Structures are given as C-alpha cells and as structure tokens.
Image (cartoon, rainbow, N blue to C red):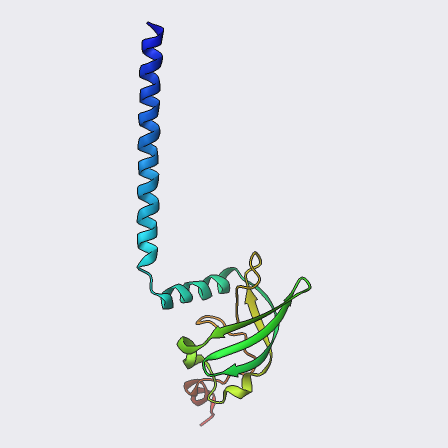
Length: 143
C-alpha cells in the first residue's frame, strides 16, 4: 500500500515540475520575443537613459570627433578607458562646430561595467562647450 502512494506522489511531483518548467520556458520565450522587437535605436536610447538615471559621473577628455563619432578617454579606479559614442541621433544637442568639443568633459558610466559610458544623452549633457539653443538666446535678450 505504501509503495502505491509513493509512486503516485512521485508521478504528481514529476508532473508539477514539468508544468513549472513549461511555464518558465514560456515566460523566457515571451520576454526574448518582446526584446527582439525593440529597434537598435530604441535600445541605445534606453541604455543612455539608464546611465543618466543610475550612472556615476567622472571626468573625461574628448580626444577626437570624426563624423558622428565622439572619441573620449577617462579613468575609473586607476583603469584608463577609451570609448566612443555615436551622436547621429543627438545632433540637435550639438554645436555647429564640432571641433569645439575637443577637451575636458563629464562622463557617466555604469559602476558595474565602467566601459559602458556616455558623454551626451537626451536628458543630460557632459559637454562643457555646448551652445545655448537659439530660442533661449532670444528670451535672454533685453528689449
């Protein structure tokens, strides 16, 4: 009699574990499918927003501006990082003369992965030589 109960219980436990595994696999599959629908531009915007929200600030130096790419270097805990940022989606936040950007700037980086960094985002700017938008200049002019 006891052996019948233990076999039945083992089957029930096995089926319950199988059901849990199927649910977990379905959840992971759905999440992977949803993430695959995000465009690369949106994924980059989310990365910049996360660094603005949770990133640490530090000092950096822009070494070169080539087309839409900004090259910069910074130190974190004695390790020097050289990085670049594609600014093609952030052109509205840049001055007309990009050569003005070469020099010291602020950088935001992920404390867990310091190589993940930005100098410019939609809601934050580490550039020290950025211009005032034309509409702000007009409002500051005295009549």
